[in-house]
Length: 167
Image (cartoon, rainbow, N blue to C red):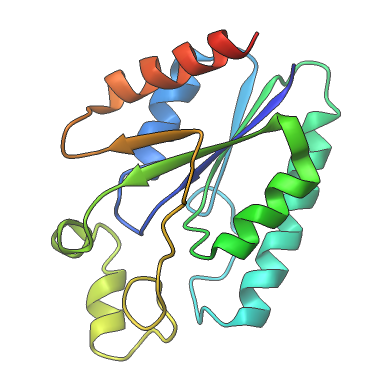
């Protein structure tokens, strides 16, 4: 069965790193990530912008799910609100796998690979998840990965084991 593997977590949590590690191991997969798509804004992170981005992502996912050669659509986006992730679950139903990349905010701020926290903390980026708006942790993700304990290679194995258990 085709799957949408949705990586959620704070900026700098390690979503993209783990998504690419998984992509290397899963045949017939594609990655949708804010870093590799130019159609997404880098802020401001308003409700309107978030909903617009979500619509675009949903349409891209639906396009790839129709492709015979694609079995896994790997998505890496912060997706800070539970209501948005619940909406995705309703749309994609049994195809949707929520993967929570759990990294403490202070670690993400120290990593800050794109300089987004620095900008948010000095007011240059508004509504940034974890700073001005909350990141609502998933209550019951399909998979939770603590990045302080689980390396990217191990995370990929955990996800593959989960997928094999679903067959």
